Length: 112
Image 1 (cartoon, rainbow, N blue to C red):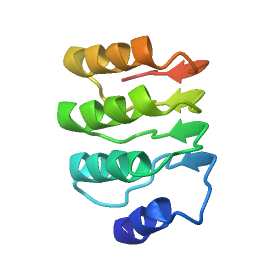
Image 2 (image 1 turned 120 degrees about the horizontal axis):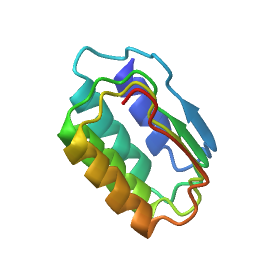
Image 3 (image 1 turned 90 degrees about the vertical axis):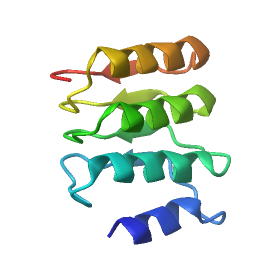
């Protein structure tokens, strides 16, 4: 359930270093899910080191939200967006976020 996941991510007493949602269909509205996920991750000082969002069919709004999170995620080293169907506008958002976040060591945009 997306609401439960968002609640857990916003919990100030929890530390999550790795979030893997590969092929996870939390909702049929991927864009809404990705936007809320990015907002939840950015709502507190995150120690997230890895974010895997494989097979999330989102639009540019969702990619923009993730990119905004990536810009401020100083501990994020691994970002997998495999099979997310990111278009050229979304790729621009990702590229822009990588100019700010210099911690990313691994980026997977395979089949995006």
